[in-house]
Length: 258
Image 1 (cartoon, rainbow, N blue to C red):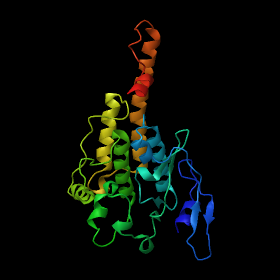
Image 2 (image 1 turned 90 degrees about the vertical axis):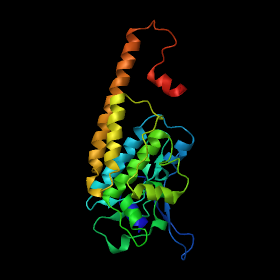
Image 3 (image 1 turned 180 degrees about the vertical axis):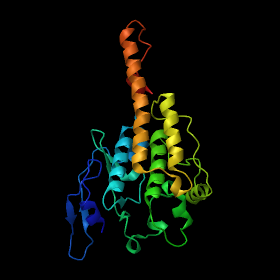
Image 4 (image 1 turned 90 degrees about the horizontal axis):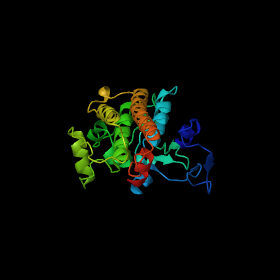
């Protein structure tokens, strides 16, 4: 079923499907996909290699594509390990084992033990852990918000809490991660505020209060535009003032040295 769903997805931010392989007639089929050079967002976070939000923006486009298909597709397992980054910075959503077509019901339920990372799981899914649950567009958006936070801060959500089930209790109880004091990217204050407001809407406790994928994409683009304009103005100022001395670093220099 995963291979069938994956084979139907064609988008620049979806990991391309090349085929399936069975070692023996009795073995389970394996999906054949391209080798992506830099690994997952999780790998980059561990190596402290993230310097901007472009990869997250591209991953968001992949979510927009899934949710806007006819019929729509719900990924169901969004976290940094399921977003791969190519050598040129391109982002690819992968692992569609928990994905489902929106109109499917009985065949697409799963248990929390089979689901995604607990720190990225929406509260309504955790509440139903004792029985069974069904992923939705809104649960994808919640998981995307926690992924966004991990990319932004360079740390997993609720990093100070060691026990995964304590994290689940926090999320179900309405607690959310604190705004990080340190960011792995340089943001203009207005852009930073806009992005934090976006995060707060994406991880709303009630699924109906969360924005759509397209809404997230629009607001993310707005925040990044604010940031890019600030960087452009800084670059123009440095060009017009060549005698400020070597101590004045450009934004790109600061990114490399921080």
